[in-house]
Length: 369
Image (cartoon, rainbow, N blue to C red; front, side, top):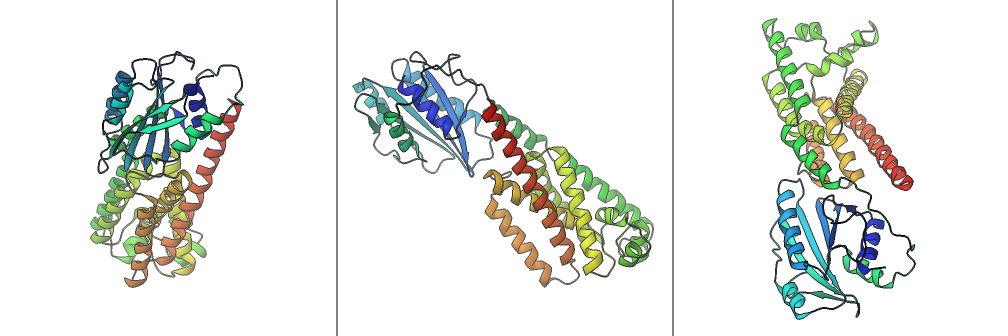
């Protein structure tokens, strides 16, 4: 078996994904010219281009460089790292000169390096000025040299749509936020109705429109208030602040999960927020902040489970924002701490379970394939 095929199969075992349209044949063999795989690690996308040195390696390296720099320019990653590996049994001076060209730009989002692998002598050749330690690629190459227990039958490429999924995600980001925007419009519409009927800060108006009032929920069994309260706001600053937060975080979360998941997280978080407010607040309460905290909880769980940022917001940034938000809850009077906590926990727990189930299903599907 060829080094190229062994290297590819080990990368796939390491949970790299085949990039569609990066290969020239249906089956990987000694006559294959190139293939590329990719893997997300946190907020970084790593791409390994495996180039067969027997053929037009220069053209294939340059093609990969141009293609991946273009297709990843708008992706939500902090960095995109492309490692083109030219594998050849005969390392010529031409290959050495080509690899010695310094493509490395450390402060760029798109980081581009090129290595050569001397198959006969089992050496890795890295050009001067280029990094020689990226992820664990060197170790994988070393494993490829020593691996001799592959199955003898040729493995047919299983087309997956790694980059197609990335492109679709970018399209969602560009056109996303539709549900969040609709909720914001609905909130402003109800807010205007409240202002026309006596004012959003009027307790009687709030109760009339469905705000949470503990006695009415518990003793009069008006449970609908647990739902309607999340669409009401008390004063202009309240609705402006919540609308800004909903758009900032809701539109991003909406782009990474299904519509059904987003709606469920928003609603169940809002209801749980209202429920805790009934038992721990003791006063009339309303607002979308509990549901928004649920969105933040969902973002924390999604980022933690999948190991990726959401719309440019890393897990650490989201957690920091949550900590700051809860800190303000204890400093500023009149904020319903229990509602915020209830919403956050509900969104975090549901999203964690949902994302874990999705990963389990994907793992089972890979095992079946």
